Amino acid sequence: MKKKFACEVDCAACAAKLEDAIKKVDGVEDCNVNFLTQKLTLVADDDKFDEVLDAVIKKAKHVEPDTVITV
Image 1 (cartoon, rainbow, N blue to C red):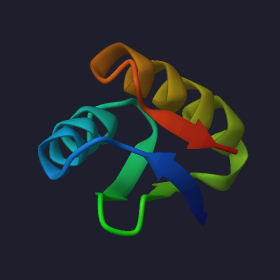
Image 2: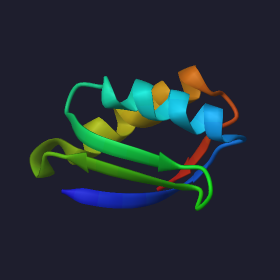
Image 3: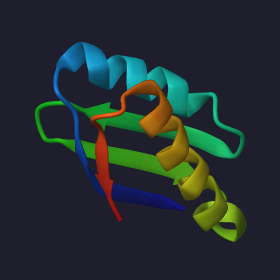
């Protein structure tokens, strides 16, 4: 399943760092963090999507505490 979320990041470097960290989360098939559009595109298995999304949000807060992902 592929879904998009609003994702507030401060700069392009932060977005790249966040994207790299999210791609390492178990269950994430692919992701893209776009600084210009302030969007997170997440691809994960349908059956575990909610679990993966929770893990992604926790990882994002750990890597970039100012990041806000709107679900």
